[in-house]
Length: 145
Image (cartoon, rainbow, N blue to C red; front, side, top):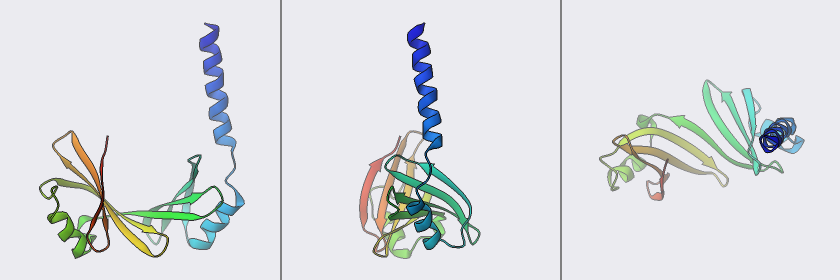
């Protein structure tokens, strides 16, 4: 019983500590500089950095920043119809062409790079995340759980 109490106490203290950590000014300043018109901003601490969910011009985004405030990426959920033709062609030429597209994200990266992540599925169990370059080249093929 004392071990259970101690475990619960440590868990609650850890949770309280995680909620008390402030977002560094470097991070919030970097975010404000990059997205001055953002509204409904919600921050999450990811230990290795911070993510901000926010609205901008009637769209939802997720931006990632390092602990020191360096912008790392911004994602936006889009429709399959919004994919560039090159990415659609790249998917159609992949071995997953007959799988269903479940979700599509446009990812902006440093250096003016754009990538697209397609979550695809076959049946109820098989799911993969496919990352494509702007030119339609398959960059990553990851199993999702």
